Length: 194
Image (cartoon, rainbow, N blue to C red):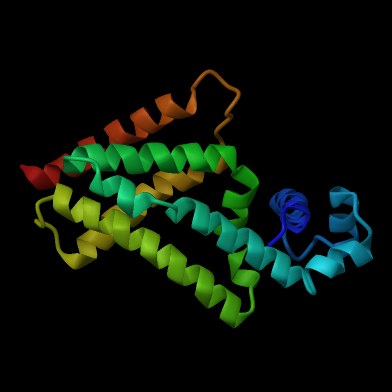
């Protein structure tokens, strides 16, 4: 993809993500996306045939960002607790830098047609599996599969729910937030190590 085309696609997607974040996917029109992207409606349709294609691009691009180099980076980290710290810190950093896209992933993905939704869900499952493997190793495989599912989704819930209250310009920096979440979460699951 050439640079100009790529720039336009990202411009449209960013404008749409902000609107989907504020108003919701269904409530946002192509006219509003066009206005926000400062591009004619015809210009939008040159890059995306449907609003659902824009949503798909936002979701898949965001999941690609989340997964980018994650497995390779984890291989270079010794210690399960250190891997957990890295995952939480990285998640919070990406989330706080991409709040509209993160919120759209959490709340608007289910509006997607089947084939698109399945592609995004596969990337989400991959992210879940990576985190679950780290947690399973951290807990020395002492938990059942059902417990591991609950523990993994509890961690994701702690990290994802911040969109509803966290202010990245407030007194708690993203690094401090990730440290707090790591401490609270690890203290909670330490009972499984006793």
